[in-house]
Length: 279
Image (tube, rainbow, N blue to C red):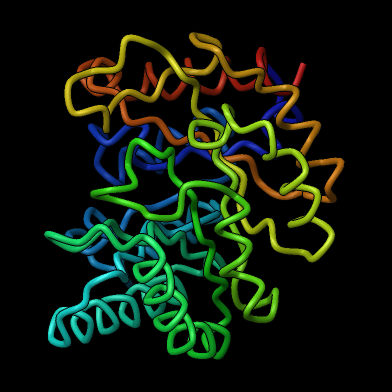
């Protein structure tokens, strides 16, 4: 495994959430991992400015910040709070030096069955957030989540739906996140990736495998690369054919991985990246 093999590799902080931020940075430097995708909660605990300095001093690139979003509330107070939190997320992304804030759009409000209305409220929020993000040098990346999350986490389930929202705004303001875990099942996804790439709207590319049976609660079922049903090389070819040449971020939510030594998991993930994505 050479430095060249890892040139586009980025590890999302949640993949090895058992590591403190300093330990994650140290492990990345030791392995030659050039990029990290950060999460707001641990970054805030450490201190946003301190995190920016720690990562920057180590020479690491912050490929994304996760996450903004949850923009579907109908209650005016809740909507105002969500907008305020997303403005803060944009500021945090700018401080960390990343140009991409990933958005998980939010599920249906309690008692609602109105998917169309929820998606329109996302568009309304983007009209407020996108210009502000552009002023701060940050792009918003709408991430479609697998349909099993539509009720509680994300009413945007396909790349087509994500692009229908994103295309209301300039590409340098709003694009999409392509995550294999969420789109691998969709036979329309390759065409939508081409659509996104033609407009410069692929703002991040993330990997996780699909393994079954899913755990109770399903959130933490993302498989290690090579353990499941997803053809990682084929998805890499697909996004590259659409013009994407940026970092490739591995984002795994997996209780069994979190129970192991974090440095070991990071080394394994880097090796799996080379084996199943690069070579």
